[in-house]
Picture 1: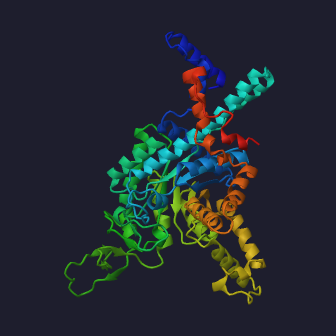
Picture 2: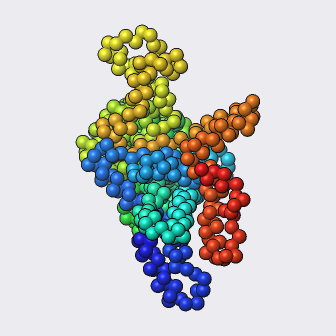
Picture 3: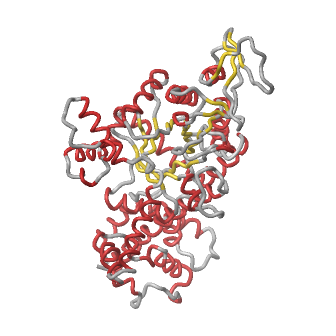
Length: 530
């Protein structure tokens, strides 16, 4: 609806309730415009439609991939989206990512925890709600500034300027963008997954990322000791997420099915199989087994048949079963095809390094069966990007017969190589990695899981070093405030960012001329007007 339509609607409402003295149609219209999303479900439906549109655009042109950064606090998400609008004029094809790792490490009441699903499950939907609270506040703040400019134009009788500002309100682009939210392994069985999915969707999540690890043995995707579950158990959780979306009326909600099989050498249990070649039998085929011949089975042995062979799967003292070495990629391909055939919309393959051809090798096999398969890829801070890409260039050069005698492959992280041609080529490959991988390997969405965890640590370290050292207050002024002012960082006016001007507007609405407002002549925020 346009500004004018909101005004007409509010005017009719007030006329029909004549005893609402002091309530103005313009104030009502402005408040409604500043809060277009009344519930989290409104957000989920709106953002799901954005993702579906972007997925269709990527199918036509794989250069139109999408991106996100992981955010662990509403303020971080808000500043990210404000920056997107400032630098690019649009939030198109940019999302947020909610990382279970960062919830565990930063938002648990237990304090910092490893990424093993030990944090409170309610902290995940609570963070989804917090992210959108801050993004909606950013809308209210920015629109409030436009409304104040409208009032100035009216006072100056500048009708042309007033019309321009009204048009800016009508064409306003919200800060509310899609979130891909990490539900880990579902925090329990399929029913537990369904209940948590509902909470996350009600908070605004339009896309849920769920992994095929066992809930009570879940590990970070870049750590050892990962244990997967048979396909039937994972598919039940995919269905649980879909039912949650459908129950709540988010008919085009997105499910991202993640496989950790590439780095997982263990399984929770032997899959149930009815007939040779079914999905359970295919899963069990990867088990590391030994033939049972004439000797008597040992006490407690678990045996399976494969055709005419009687086999003993290798079982650990933990009661987990071991997969054969070298089967990870094959298991990933099977996981992905089965997930897509059972309701998943997007895939996530957790890898141990960022290598376009490694990813493409698996995606080519998946797309041979499911042509439209698309991947969400973790551009993880757990990868040493510098070392990985320098080693990739080293290996290519060596294969091409170039002289690499001046480089030690195991020490390519060294600063001594920073100005070398090898380092420059590696950096160029890092720069174009997302574009290259989207064109070659079917990656629809690139995300960095933990970037704002690392940026917070780095910026705090720099400030502490300067402020508590010889630079004193200059350490803050030169490296923070002066840059904020010159680079147009919105939160330099931190009172405004926290909502003081929105509060003043409301005081005007509620109390009129009796309002005691914060934004007067003596507000020190005026020092940043320039």
